[in-house]
Image (cartoon, rainbow, N blue to C red; front, side):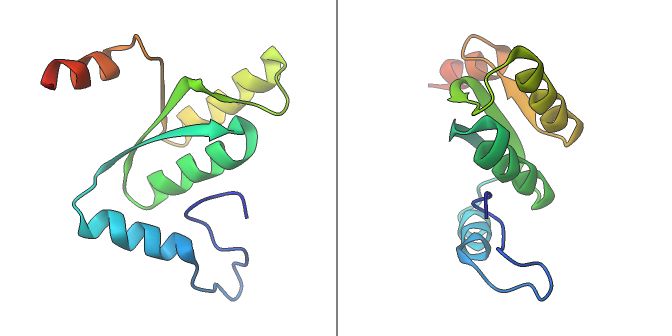
Length: 104
């Protein structure tokens, strides 16, 4: 199980902490999530994709994650998968982060 939102088995699907995470975030009116950590090509990627599937506006902060396979081609492939899945891959100096700073 790589995703914080995911179930270890899909058939039959069993309730997991991920179900509780979705419920908790929605009950607390969270609509946007920022994902960081290790590893971009596993846990970060699957958590981000599942966040989108669960209806969250999802961002991965590029400088705050690393891949197990750190080769340029592998990193670019994983970023494409994220973007194709509806995840916004951002940087700390990008417009999305500047907007947050301006609100403070």
